[in-house]
Length: 334
Image (cartoon, rainbow, N blue to C red; front, top):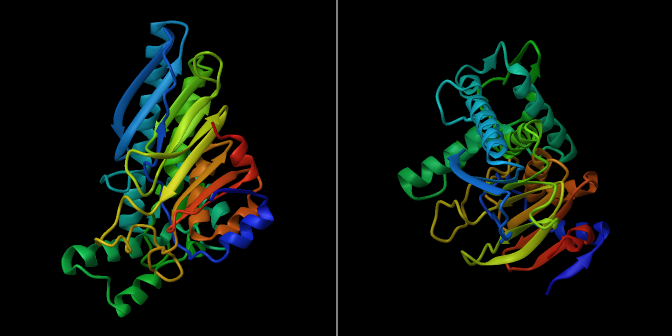
């Protein structure tokens, strides 16, 4: 049964859920928006997922120029934050442990990560990467979780409080490596939205595999409609949101897993080193995609984080399929 609740009730329910670090998954899909002569749509593979940009433009030339700007901005920032690609800023940071010229974008994203780390009481922690790599490698090689000793060794290299950064450089601290996936993808989507605005686009929807930015309205002057994937049944949606000048992000534990039972997945607790066990999906809505992105991750780890984030609305789905949402989230349902 689904219930509307205030934040105090929400925290009572969510406090019993186990902690895990979640990275955004492609769990949010564009609901049917209708057709219009001024609606342009383009899809490309970026950031390991499908990215779709829908926009309303006054002409084909304006649409083409706006799309070119948005894709160019995305490519430029991917070259900073893609930890899987050699030679990117974050890859070099992980390889050497430091950066002497991090650039404005890296500092902005690290600042957002630090803010979420603080309000989540350490539950949002980009230095969890050694734990994720350890669990993935253990299942690939041995088909089982890592040994306790190996887990403790990886945990000793987790802690965002040891990361130092500023305009003059970034230092990770001994043995640390970071993944900014839980905030950088949303940040990139926001910057693509800014690129569209610079090209004169007021109405657009960007969907980057679960990180969604809705600018203005869809054809007909109605809010953009965004569907949330059912975590238990592929191709089925549990909710549809109406969004106008808002962003949404979903973190989930059911699409990337290492064992048939799906008990071990990529959503790792930075405190215990183990995967989450109670929740399967967290969707947050905020003004910026980077905020929604990081907050969905943090809320998956530590639901109490929402006490410090009054600027967002949320839907949680636990392993039993039970849904809980804030009253503001319910008002956005289509």
